[in-house]
Length: 271
Image (tube, rainbow, N blue to C red; front, side, top):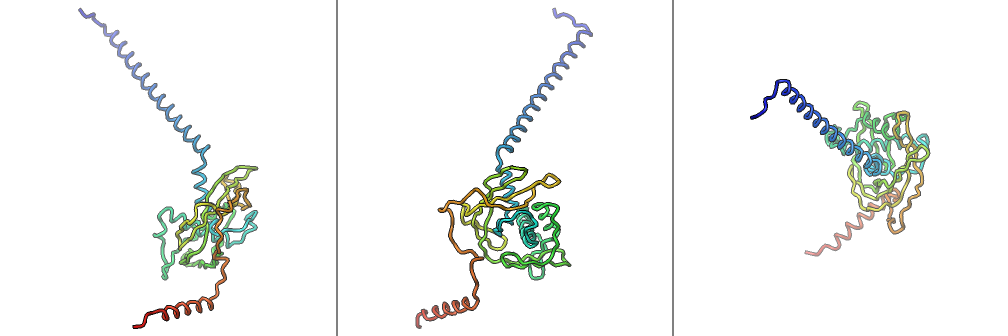
C-alpha cells in the first residue's frame, strides 16, 4: 500500500525539483559561456599571432601608392601636393571597385567617371591622417595623365588610361619598433589597363619599407618610405624597359608605321 504524502511534503518535493532544474540550467549556461570565452580567446590568439588579415588590409591600403613607385621620403612635408592627390584619387577608385560601386558613379558628357572630391579627401585622411587637407584642383600625375577637377560637379573627371607598366603591393612583414609601424612591401610587376590590373609576375621585383606613425586618435598613418632590408634575388628581377624609360618620338613612330604599311602592300600577291 502506497504511503500517503502530506501536502507539505508534496510542496517540498516540488520546490526541490524546481531548484534542481534551475541548477541544471545555470550549469548549462555556465558551460555555454565558457565555450564562448574559449572560442573568443582562440580567435583573439589567431589575430595576434597570425598577421595575415592585417597584412592584406595594408596591401589594399597601399595599392595606389605602390603603383606609382614613389621615391623614398621622410615626412609628408617632403612630398608634393600632386603625390597626395594622385594616390588618394586612385585609392578611392580601388575602394569603389572593391565595394562594387565604381560602375554606379555619375559620368560626364564625354563618359568620364566623376569621382567626388569628398571621397578623395576621406581616403587621404585614412592613409595620411587628418592633418592632410587637400585643395582640390586639376593636376597631372606621374604617368602624364591629367585629372580635371570640375568645381560645378565637385569632383575629378577620371581620364581613360592607356596601358602602363606598374606595380602591386605584397606585404611581407609588419614590425612595431620605436613607436613606429614598419610595413615591408614587395613590388609585384603587373600591367594595368584602365582601372584594372593584371599581375604578370608573382615574385617581388624589389622591396621598400612603408613607415606608419600613430596620430592623436591612435590610428596609424603613412609618414615615409625607406629602403628595406628585404632584397629581391637576382633571378627574380625582370630587366625590362618601363614606360617612364621610353622617349616617345612621334615623327619616328609615324615613319615606322608608313614603312610597315608600305611593306605590307609590297608583299600582297598580284591578281
